[in-house]
Length: 243
Length: 308
Image (tube, rainbow over all chains, first blue to last red; front, side):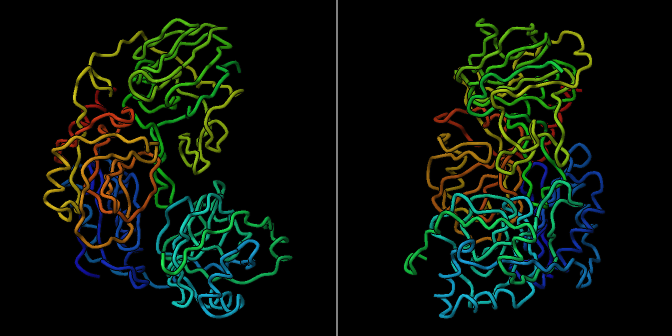
């Protein structure tokens, strides 16, 4: 970890910057900082938003002024030790990979110069780290993707991406928790619910978790409660010149 | 229970409170009243907690029919409100009798009205708040975040409305006649990454509020701001963040903003400035003015102290 910086970003918010670049190796430090900051701020914390390299601390200005808030951050970071690996949860997410629910399987296979099965095998071949949550409730940015699968975002985002859609953009992968617009390449769909107001902690994924995808059949997908309705809209695929 | 029946929902009438907190790390947006100052005053008029649930009416179009008599409070914009066709100016308590209609037409000044109810509107909190976020399907009457629509029935927690209260003068978020709209901005760490000319222009030229404005963000148009720094990794976004995409035209991010993002930022408007911006119609001229964190905090605490 480089020397952390504490930056003022608003009347009641600080950014704690631990790293400059996205890296899986950051995660144990980020998790440790998350825990230490929550502890140091206690009830004076309104929200803490970790991202790849930073944590946004939104504190209660009725309890703390800027100086006191900065002091709490410094206190939290003093003697920080990285969280032990394997602390996050491991998830195996079943996915029905099929062009009807994952139209960009074709595009990615073409780029790879292989078959759709090759794409599926590569997507399922490694554990992904959850780097950050954002964009929508329970939407987890995961990486790093196999270099050969890295694909630019769609030129024009879809208006509607079905809940459970498994997606790829550049060297990251994600699952859309709910029906939403989206510009990522869709390759399949999971029957697993990722976000629920009745679920403990609401979100299935947390930063630092490890996720592996597992290919399942259409039958298994439906059996597990999946909705096989095809993605109606075709993705607007950019030509290589545009990306 | 008898209540107020929605006869016409209009473009966007939402149940809002102070916002949804403690879940932003899961990607859940803050939500809450865009002009939280007006909601605070509406609740104060009835003796409620400042951010008790009420209705945020954006640009009008709402009609409510009273099944029972109740004392309400209305603050914010002038949306041409009428009580049984009699004009009803915002900034006061009023009683609606059973069988009367409260209607909102279209904006004359400002954009958003706030309607407060005795003890606060009755709705079940979702993830700790009743704030309606349409995009996330959270909050509101049905818990699914949708806007008020024909047939909805608004009920309230009840309790005393306290004694008659009158709004102090000059407390609103709407500018007076001919008054310049100045928006206080706390400079952020990336401000040094903008060109010197851009930093000068940011604070010394008027900005126009664009048509592209909603509860997520408000685009400002004016001189092109140039960011010279390197590309950023996505990071958490505070309320009021002034982000500058590649076209150089800033976007002020409000209550329903995305939780993380990667555009460089000049800094963030104070929450008080966000409330004022939320009342600016497209085409309004606004000025950004730098403020120190300590000063901004004091002004904010003074506002909260008004409500006891």
